Image (spheres, rainbow, N blue to C red):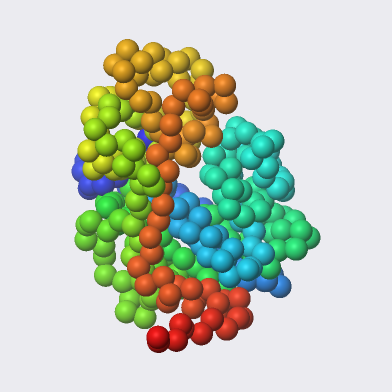
Length: 329
């Protein structure tokens, strides 16, 4: 689905839907009450959010995975694999699996760390343990109570924060923001441009920003851009900052499975305008393979402020001593 515009404001439609939020809240509360979290023999790090889609969880999860690689930790990603037809548990193989089978995000995660896709997080965790995992990084799962988390990382979109601060379907929240903040061990705010509600002083807060890798190659060129994201305008805005001539944009629903007809239509339009067809890496894995050579991706990176402090937290979670600081010359 596309993120409703009214989720950012308290208007008449949002207010009309307020009575239905109690059912959503009740379902989440009952799930947490009746589920006893299982403690694993290895650390579990959860990269999650309180809003439905678009917070920047996957870039943060990729960042954490790269840090674990740098530390020499045999970490595994664990993900539900939204939209994937395979129930799992299955280890994701980008050379074998499709987005229709495992979801789009798991294919990106698997390029960094071994990735387990499973609707049942506990079953997925058991497979990771069997395969020798020393740590599990959950991509999403902040509201899933099946596993005890050693580090709950709450990711907040710094552009929209909590929207109108109402629960689904009246707003974007999966649970009340105050409960999510209380359950978190640390907070990462991605691309902060708006006012984020005050956070408890005892919570470590990290600022992160996404940036286009090799974006300079597009400067001055004509682009036809498309994507299927929760907040597609964020992608289009990033392209505009590169000094491109954005002749057309087309937004699809988040996780949209592209058809050959849809892609061919955009290829023809881009060729007619002598423009480059561009999308995101997350969208590319949902494009029919035979048509991927007809477009390019804008690769995104993520920078974390105070990265050393974050590394120290990860070393602590893993029970390891951080390396000594470099000696002054």
